[in-house]
Image (tube, rainbow, N blue to C red; front, top):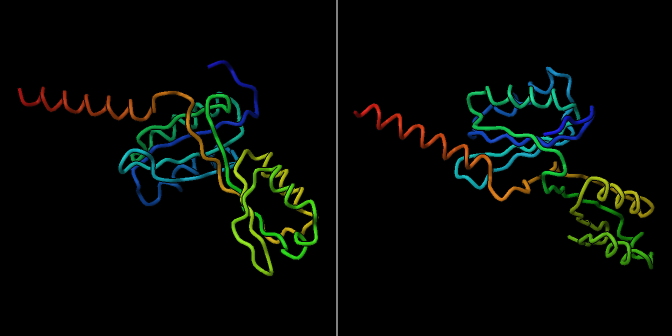
Length: 190
């Protein structure tokens, strides 16, 4: 990987067992290096019993390498990787609550929703809830466009990401570990 500039946005994926306290252990690693976590999401992964943390953070290449090495030292962590935006496909989800009265009075609201590929999730007499999936700048732009309608609430999820690679790197790692364990069992039986 070529040397990245300072303040590059990296996405770190961490695969763990589902253990109490692991989030705290991982976040402390960022805190000790004075790194701000820009976004964080956690979910189960495609591998049974394995959870995936997706963490976005701005730093330099040397620091992110050190962070990932330190994360991997945690006993409940199976493997960790880091990526730049060109190596992954990523999205976030944003929800917006706006005043229904203001949108009913606007002839441009429908066009605004269509132009932004947003979805209306609920409409009632008091408020309307919209959803937008996209990158941070896209969800923020819709917020700015909705501001004149009276945004009552706004929330954005953390980044979710998958690699552009055709093979899941953690699957390879787990297969290799299983082969090593099998080989050790076979050698021990001899």
